[in-house]
Length: 398
Image (tube, rainbow, N blue to C red):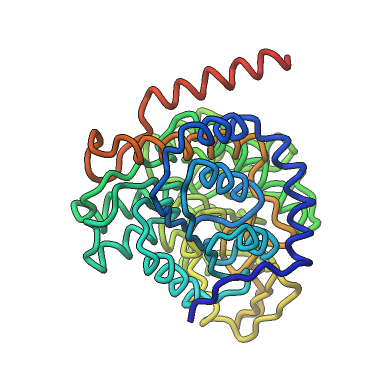
């Protein structure tokens, strides 16, 4: 059963202290907030949200609320930060969910958001869009946005042709792919790995599964700190690019016996499964930075283990019948947000990404009739407007 978050005073106070710093470093959203206060583009609309509930998200939500939006939202599975949920609830918003919710409870939270009857969706992983399609209530939705590759994949496969309203895919933006996916995810994944495991990067053999924008960034930042990095990639063109960038390239199975650490970054289910597990050396670490906790086949791994030892809240050691042990980070969830002491992507990168969200949602609210149905990229004029603002800011600080 879904549970509406309450504004616990201690949690609210903690969030307020964290948000003071983060707001001060998000000038793009600050400018959007001032603009929305004047224009009220979301007046009369309820935005249903399913998005990681962390401090940068709270600044986006404040920005949308300043534009007249009513917000009903929940986090993504395993990444909700309870102080941020309490803070938003204390502001009069309807928020569902906690950090320790099970996957079943997360799905119930999504249903609770849809029960509120939103007219615009702010989605991450296409959970809300899939729920609307299942309910056959799409006629009530003006349009929405989708944050990530995993959700875009769902919109273009299982939900293709079933979503009769426009969905602007923020992750289709080249601006986001460069600024947030490559550089911010790369930085945050490496930072989170070091913080959670307390292990060194130099000399460690890393296999990054996937050479998309996030995988490229993870590989780049690992190598820049002295890691030995190989890329597992089945797409010929992406594999070719990785090879020319100087990485060892093979399939995940082919690289498994070489690896000390495997990090998945594909958005696809089951890319590391029993075939890979069988080839791994004792003590290999498995971690995922994709949106859904399905890239590592955790159920298969757990079923094959004779014993699972919780080393701490973010590290499990699974002992196998042949005497080997494998180490799993954050139960296979997105470990830079679901792991211990989560920081997520850098503040500046999320200012960029959430500015794309804010202006795309404004376009939906004011001009959905001019947009095609289904998944589509961020309008070019929005991308270029933000790019110009970013270049001006970077030149001013050079």
